[in-house]
Image 1 (cartoon, helix red, strand yellow):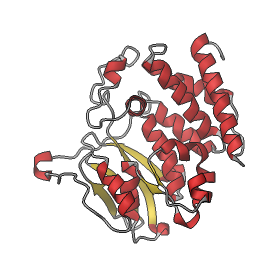
Image 2 (cartoon, helix red, strand yellow):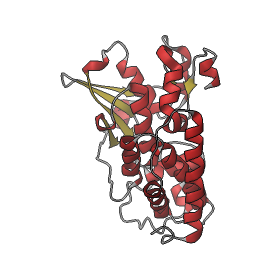
Image 3 (cartoon, helix red, strand yellow):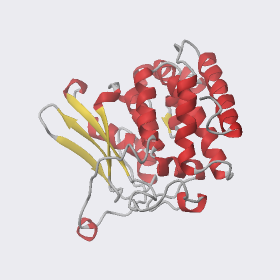
Image 4 (cartoon, helix red, strand yellow):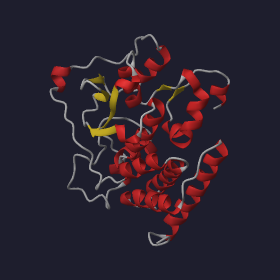
Length: 279
């Protein structure tokens, strides 16, 4: 916020900033906007260049599916931290890797996309794409779809944010499409990975709900990494906190920080007391 208020160009790699306080941040950015560094939002940004926003039908965010998507036989109640951290495509920090495994990462990206590109949650779809080659797509009113493809390498979106409106070499190798062979797409499994649905609900409710979602998720993921919560307990804690805390309007950063603090306290209490604590 300080950088935006000082008139700086901001290239944002931290989606939680927009999830928590997106309306305030985008207002501060004004006509300059934000240069997205998330690979999915960078892809959408590139697909929108030179296009009229009123011609956009929907945005389609791709998800790798994380380490458990290809293993429906696994009992997610029993998976270990080591298993959850074994991402098949991306090398990321522990928190983001767990978010990828629960699909919360895609939920946060849906919220981020609504703010960056000014579309409602209902026009932002998610599709599982295990190869992580198509980073996201934009569908237009005439039925055309534009997609941005590239190796799963963060140097590409970083270079794009730095170079815009030009491009420069990022050091990322070219794709060998013949070697890749096939690109697969599947709908997300909301029953097995409920975090995506919880994020969509928070996006529709608005106000402080996304900040509450984000805070509860951070506390729950940390508890899972510490062995104090099982994998499916992450979504359960988030759900309990969202149901317990009513959303309120966001008028200033203080509203966001208050909601964040309340959600963290409630999530920690829920984990310490067990599933029936707030029944």
